[in-house]
Image (cartoon, rainbow, N blue to C red):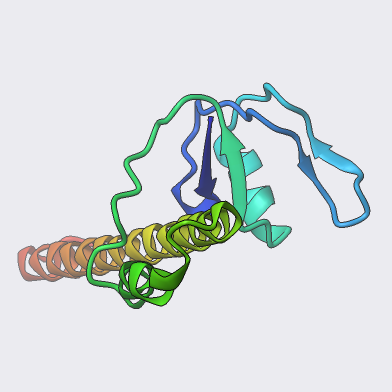
Length: 136
């Protein structure tokens, strides 16, 4: 089971835990297979993270993003609490949160770059069609 940002969800993934509202009402049941429509609905409901079955994504270590740098800094910030099991868990929660944010930030940047490339390709295609005298 893996907690992932909704931005990284893909059709075919299955929910390992139900998606609930703040009041506890179940919106999507455990075991539901995600589709594009369901993912878009989750985005419109401002759901940030979901728990899916298995480990479908390599979320990495945060990389060079601002969230990744925050994750790297945790060892330094918690250096005095190496023997405290509760502070170790707190550090783990922060690391997971920062890594999720970094993965979402990376996915958003890649999606933006892909959209720019597609727009440039479409503009080039339209320009070439105009040169040939074709209508689009």
